[in-house]
Amino acid sequence: YISVTGVQTCALPILTTPHESDVPCILEELQGCAASITIAICENRGRDVGPFVSLLRSGILDRYTAVLKLHLKKSLYSAQGDAWRQSLFRELCGDAAAVSRCTRLLRRGDVGIVGPHQYFLTSEQFWGANRAQTKALLAAAGIISNEQSPSLAFFAGSMFWFKPAALSALSTIPESDLAFPPERGLQDGPLAHALERAFAPLAQGRGFRVTSPALNGIDIHSVDCSRHTVPVL
Image 1 (cartoon, helix red, strand yellow):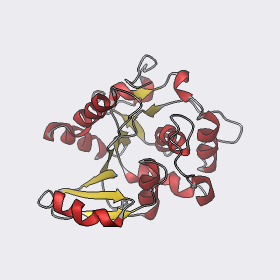
Image 2 (cartoon, helix red, strand yellow):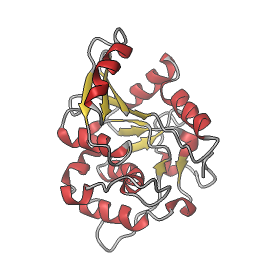
Image 3 (cartoon, one colour):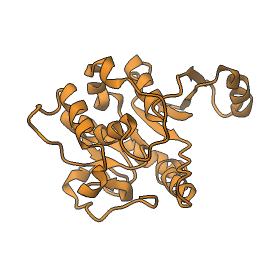
Image 4 (cartoon, helix red, strand yellow):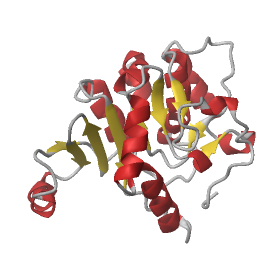
């Protein structure tokens, strides 16, 4: 599932699962963790990104100042998958100080996404088989023209804090362009990976900064991240 935490004065988890039968177990496991828990039943398509986009386009997140997108990220094709997941969790929500740093940045009017600095990728090698589909999504959202080619810039792992308004352009993409096919276990090229590469450009196209806790609000696009990599690629 994805765990999306909206932050105003307290944490209000919103979790997604494809199985309605899991709801009682989830509620029992998380009782006492928050004053309110919302569970959304989402079709098992699009990995973590499909349910996230569905929630975002529904408007349920619009009232929040800061939202944390998390997921369980197995990365079973690599022995380093668990270490990568734990590293992402530590930087984004490892302790109260980490959460405070990220949410404070999002309370600024100009910051739209805060993600893990070392996993912001800009090297062309990380386009994989996703360039054409990412370009089509950004053009459909009105961020670039059909003649433009986007620059690669994304938080690998698809976990980050964000302001819902920063990703509002997702709502302008036709539903037909966001139809996730049945999962086939692809390591590269699915729609979810194209959307992962579209989030930062979508925010930037709406006039928001993309940054990291380490940069404390400085736009990450102004920093050389060409040598960044991830454990599983």
